[in-house]
Length: 340
Image (cartoon, rainbow, N blue to C red):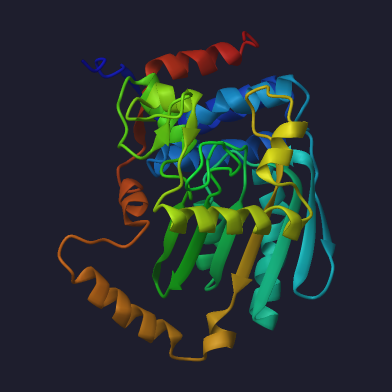
């Protein structure tokens, strides 16, 4: 028998932002860093990405309280070539690094057709769509990926070596929101598994294994065990690709190395991020947009399908009020009083 649905409490997006910023600054982040994280959290709640919204705040706070993350970070962007940039996040949270590097990345891609930034010494705890959507809104194609802690076993094994290793891709569309794909290479994001475990819900078979290596639908058992890649050997291969792109390519660690240096405080570990921007105007010429829109028309004409990201955009039209797990909300309010 499943547990009853946990109680929720209504709260406005403005209140979510204010609360998120307050708890960050109470625990040592300066205004700039607190606002960057609060904006990321608020946008996740706005778009229905609850596993990357307020749910992440306790982890952010653990990382600040332990001293693992620099809440006063001021990232440094270095231009390696006209199209290659390296951003030292100064051991801060990733949202502040994005504020320091995305505008230069966009300018390079618009001028030269492409741009790439490697982000080092960052602590990423959020969804990836905000970065690439920002590029898509500027008429650019965007791609990004990160690795994480080793929670995912390669196909055929039961020992975790991959992170959930998400990637995101954005395609610009004239006069409308970009098409955005944001997905983990694991069968399910760990945050979603943790929420299912909290709420007493089952997950689909194939999501992961228990600590004893058995297939299970019990989310709490999977949270203690190991996740599996989506799509069998195909997802496993993509997870391997992300390990390389978000690790040695950007001067950072593989997921297992990330775990070895992490202090296990429950907050986001230090890692790297690759962000690419490409100009379809310069690479494809004048017809790229019309050609893509014709494809999207055919795609959406198929009964029962929708473009990736459509649900997020629909959720933005749902006004200013969101329902949040009441126990989580109470915990965050307590944290604003420095009560752990």
